[in-house]
Image (tube, rainbow, N blue to C red):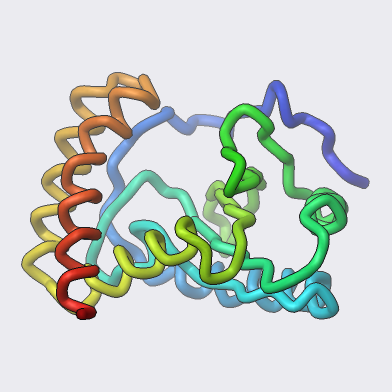
Length: 186
């Protein structure tokens, strides 16, 4: 049964909108399980599936969100959207862009409630490159992990549940690290 709650997505019981949580290896495990599940469904679509976001960086805490990046190499975004919805992902039309479709799914993994944010993008496109480059650069530069964690904690305090404030506080750091990562690749 597919949940159709895209506009009024339910909150995880007892979950505050922005609460910082320490790093946990459970997210990597949950990602690998969800990747296997997704791979079965998207196999014929020629898509790449990556773990991105804070939970993909060892030692970096975050908001209890598992970010999954699905890069469509070729194929129809509309068909992929429909496949994801049959897997229980709720499409969030107001949270995407022309380059990204955004989905949410709440899961219980090893008795822990967590939310999945799935980003459907073009493989190798600007969204794909930015998210994977940022993740990879943080993994290689441990000092930046601590710095980013401090920025995220500050963002949680300042945001008081406001997504726009939360993103704005983090944005400058993300842009700078991404620029540095691009320079380092040259």
